[in-house]
Length: 465
Length: 38
Image (cartoon, rainbow over all chains, first blue to last red; front, side):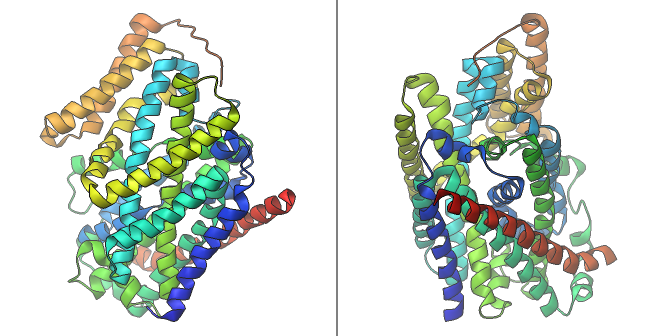
C-alpha cells in the first residue's frame, strides 16, 4: 500500500461525501427520504439495487467459501440472483400499482389489515438492523485485513461516513452514492480477477491446478444440504424492505422491471468474479485462512495504484449495503410503526425529523453493537431465517392475486415464525432439515387452512396509503 | 473446464463493461438532477 493507493481510497471517500452534500438539499418531505420522489430510472435502479444486495457476503464471503469448497457454494447461492431475476420480471413491477406505497407494510395493510402491517414492520426493522450490524463488522474486516489496522477503526470511520450522508440525504443520497459504489465494485473487482488470473499464467493454468471437487456444481454437498443453502439464498432475502423500496422509487412498472431483472443478471456474474478470486487465492496462497482469501489477493497480487482502487471498491461494496439497510430501517420504523400506530396525525415535517433521528439512533446502535457486543448482531441475524416463512407467501399472494385475508395472513405469519424458531433453536434442526423449510410449509399450510375455513369471501377494504 | 477457462476472462471483462455503461447512465441522471435543482 503506497501513496498512490492511499490517494485512490481518499478520492473515493471524498466523492461519496461531495455527492452526499450536494443531494441532501433535495430532501423536503418524507417521500423524498423514503423513495427519492419516485424518479429513479432503471439504470439507476439497477445500480442501486445491485450495490445494495452485493455486500460483504457477496464479495469476501463468496471468495472465502470458494477457497474452502470451490464453485459449489457459488452455485447454491446463485439462487439469490436467479430469484431476483424472477421477482424482477413478475412481482416487482406490480408493486408500482400501489399508488403512494413506500413500504411493504403499506401493501400488507391494504390486503391483510393492521396486524399484518405491524408484524411485517417489526420483522423488517429487526432484520435490517441485523444486516446493518454485519456490514459494520465487514467494514472493520476489510480495513483490518488490508491495512492491518484494528477492526474498530474501520467500523467507526466507515459507519460515521455512512451515517452522515444517509441521515442528511435519505434515499436520494443513498441512491446517488450507490451509483458511484456500483461503478467501483463493478469495474475494480473484475479487474482484480483479470490481473490475478494473468499472474497465475492465464485461466488454463489456474483451472489445471484446482482440485476437481472445486469445479463441480454440487461439490461435497449432499442433495439436502445443497437444497438448504439454495432455499436460504433464494428466499432469505426475497423482496426485503431495501429492495422493495427501490422498486417503489421508480417512476413506473417498466423501470421497476428492467432495473430489478438487470440487477439479478449482474449479481449472478458478480458472484462468479468473487468466487474466482477465492480460487486464485487457493492456488497462489494455499496456507492463508479462508476468510483472508480476497484481501490477500488484493494485497499481494495487484500492482500499486490498482490496490488502492480495489480496496476502495471493497469499501464501496460494504458501505452501499450498509446505507441501504440503514435508510430502510428508518423509513419502515417511521411509516409502519410511528405514523401507523403511535402518531397517525404527525405532520410531514415531523415524520421527516423522526426518520432522521431514527437513522442516527439505529446507525449509532448498530456500530456500538458491532464493536462491543457482536453477539447482539448475531442474535439479530436470527431474523434472517424468519423473513421468508412469515412475510413472503402472504406478500406474494397479495401482490400477484390480490388476495384479501386478514385472519389467514396473521395466523400464517405467526405460525411460520413460531415453527421456524422452534425447529431452528428449540430442536437444533434435526434430520438435516432447515428451520426455513419447516417454517415455509407451516406458513403455507396455515394460510390455506384458515383461508378456506374462515377468510374465503373476506372483502377487507382498507384505505390505501 | 474449457467453460471455466473462457469465463475467467470473459465474465470480468463483460461485467466491467456493463458497470461502466450503466454507471455512466446513472451519473448522467445525477448531473441532470443537480442541474435541474440549480
